[in-house]
Length: 304
Image (cartoon, rainbow, N blue to C red; front, side, top):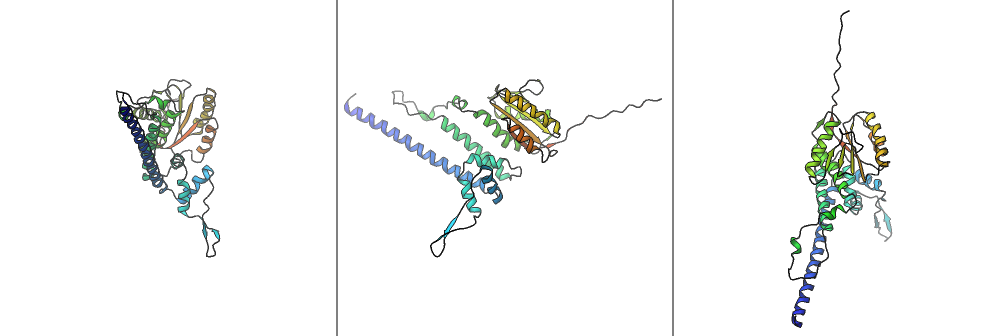
């Protein structure tokens, strides 16, 4: 290769790296703009009490707006809704999503926004995990833009699969069952298993409720335990305490209790949630409809 060829090759490599750098900057700007749009959309559904509750939940200080009076002295004023929104918008989109998802009285617009945020976060994770450093140019001139993502990298992220499952159940599955009615825990389990298998065909999702194994009601990829509770009596929830302790002792990487709140245990589920979480379990409370089928009593009358 002559000197001029080397100069051209060097210039070509520099140009390619500059182009990759410019694209990375452009992608990051687009990502931040989209994140800002989603935050604005979600926060527009927050009342001022929701905004205050979010800050209190995560331990953030309240906004402290100031202004200068006619003498140039700095004065403090009472924060208004815009001040609370500005403060909350500075926080992570993941925390905003998680806090909003806890509200069972979400508007349809807010629920749709949560789904948008899930898709945005999934896209961000995939983008981040498939990035590779530019390779030196070779004669085959591989097109890096058409290379397939290395999906095995996702599995290397701690609890990525478990977080995906929890997010799906908390947001998307809740929407699916809004109009459903369950008569017992078996029906609830069968329905969730079917939904998870449809959403995550690449995962091994076992319905272990009837197998009497110490792996919960649903066992995913041989390591994630999902224990379902049809919350119409304290007996089933008390049983969950012993199960939570047992799963903790077995050191499963992910344990979650999925509680179907059918309105029979109002005011008491929060305490059970704290007890389960105290044993390292995640807890999702789904709003649902239910009417357990009780066995009919048969009376036999005998003639004396």
